[in-house]
Length: 448
Ligand code: HEM
Image 1 (cartoon, protein in one colour):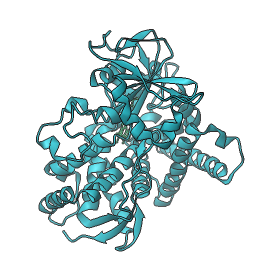
Image 2: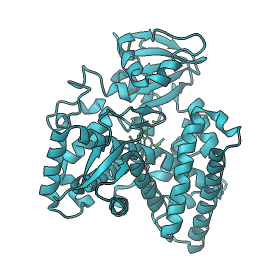
Image 3: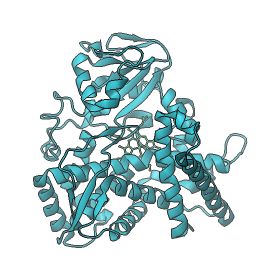
């Protein structure tokens, strides 16, 4: 749906980030101290021009402007270099297609996220969290970021293809997916890695081939069974274009790969951040433990418990505020427009920086502080909390991701104490997803 023609509210300012280097612009800051560079931007205006090599990006963090950019689809399209690169690597899917194809793709996939399916998905989430933590041993050190990613990729494989897949096949696909997704991030940032033969390139290519043959085998089994399993793959198999043509195996593989690309590292990051924030804030961890002990009484958590775990939900909400995994949503202008009085020619890059939006001091008191209580106290403006975006392309997996993060957090925190091996604060890594980077933590069992 096209958004209404909107004007930027008055009194918003535009500016330019100072200190651009010749040729490189602000890239050196983004490479060496990205978050403190970002933090400095609102001081220069509500729309700030940042030079990334030869390109200029317009960074937006004011709530009215973010809203405008995400909903005015006649002016701002989901296209541009980043999307083209991801599409070239992983194919066209709901999370990567331009506006023109979006409506049909969204209509196709939306039913896979219907709330009636959520209990089934939640059962997979709890089973996979149990399988993950069953490998943990007291006293051992695990990288929480990697473990969370292992969990979300396993859940993705198990929910996308819900029928007739063996544990071994699922694990092989999960492994391929992990290499693939990591590889996509590297290739978006440094496309040159694919030009030079290396073990990493071989691994990536092998994973891509394994993913494609694995998905093709599952697709063949689904087609042979001729049944609708009510999962994303069954929905995609039923799609026909105006000529009655079904999606090819490659197109199906690309659709599911981009779905996982959008869902796996986002959800794993928020879980890893939440675990780290709790380790650094013992009082909040104590509150969470008390809630979990009182509600679960030593039993494993299920989706039915979630409504009775409001503090757990607020921890996830607060982690999503401080470290929104989709920290920068990019758009390209497709016609002349303006933002805060700054004229923008077609083809201009605009970045909605959710990381900055969520830390605006006039919106969130003591904005840099991890304070899950701000949500229950009603002092946080919910309409300025946009970790899942807005408008027609708002995250289709918002409930899925929230339920997964909440269940995994409850399951882990009720049974385990996690202590960071290093007391140094994590150094967030803003790639496509704002990841906490490696988080080695020592495990201790917790008796509820
Ligand atoms: C906490 C976890 C998650 C966060 C923070 C998140 C965030 C986002 C954001 C901000 C967008 C909007 C992007 C845009 O407008 O360009 C988006 C879109 C999307 N997300 Fe998520 N996401 C999460 C989990 C998931 C999960 C679990 C799935 C799938 C299982 C998923 C699938 C998608 C897809 C397919 C889109 C594109 C939707 C469309 O264009 O219609 N996400 N996500």
